[in-house]
Length: 229
Ligand code: BV8
Image: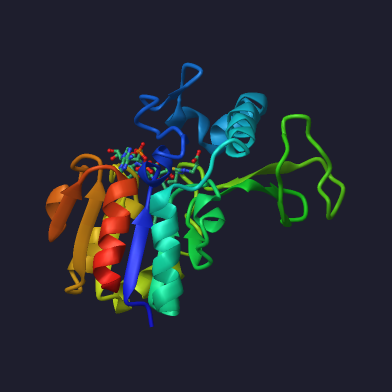
């Protein structure tokens, strides 16, 4: 029975040194992220898109979970199945911080998806040199991430968790991208208590019962310690 659904965005990993989308002004090497994170970009400029994800995958080796990730893992240790973490992030810092109940609704950087056999495999290296799929050998691997215009993963599971939750907490997200940005309305419409923990007011901050502003590495441990007191 999910009592608490937590949604996280790039802000929860910011203090680990993973750049957020806004901090980079949504730009990467002069490209707008919205123009690189799309199936069309991958079809027309696969090398640019592969380099975008290869660079971010390589950078993951140099970052560590921060107190916010570890506090959420402590909460899962205390309440188990009553907590579900839904993350928009494609980094693996929630898992490396100790969380096991994590839904990557926008996919995972350290995973490759074969367009020939549909197989998904953990992946830690570059994809730009078109390595063969470990399962079928065809060189049709793409990053296993959800691009703009593609359907987020595990939406049924997420909506079911929101429907049965008592509390919805949004951490470190600007509320700019749907359907994740709409989860607060979905929760509020069902009488679920909603809380925003973010460095600054997000686009949807007015939709939350309560909003606390500051760094996730301070706000999240405080919130978890209060809950577990
Ligand atoms: C879909 C993976 C149909 C890839 C990402 C017009 C209107 C409304 C919607 C649309 C529209 N036109 C198109 C759409 C749909 C579109 C969309 O929303 N577009 C936007 C641009 C308007 N959405 C889609 O295409 C989605 N698919 O709609 O399919 C559907 C719908 C429902 C059900 C079934 C099918 C797919 C979107 C997925 C795109 N992929 N990521 C990759 O990573 O490269 S999106 C990416 O950006 C993230 O995953 C995240 O979702 C999004 C925003 O990023 P944030 O995580 O919020 O980060 P950001 O930098 O923006 O903000 C950071 C926040 O942290 C800030 O608020 C900051 O203050 C705070 N912060 C910073 N430091 C700290 C901190 N907080 C605390 N502590 C700190 N230290």
